[in-house]
Image (cartoon, rainbow, N blue to C red; front, side):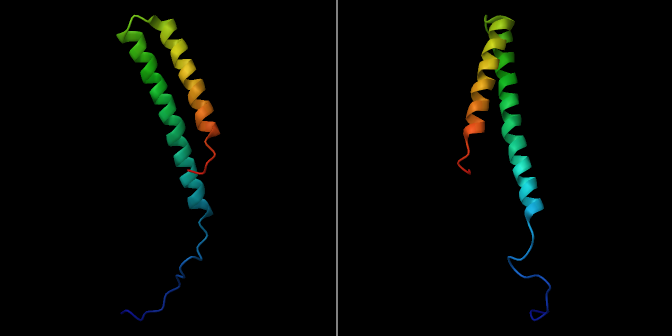
Length: 78
């Protein structure tokens, strides 16, 4: 059984589609995490503090802007 011929050759498979899917999932995770964290921040500030809706909304917008700047500038390949 160990001597069966195989069509598979290590390192010769085209993986562009898998790499694109991985990049898409990582991007979706990154931006989705920012959206969820901003939503949680706004809701906590709105309902659990005396900041009110406007204070919570302003803080959430600032957090999103800072998050976008950080996430877009992270071109280090990690």
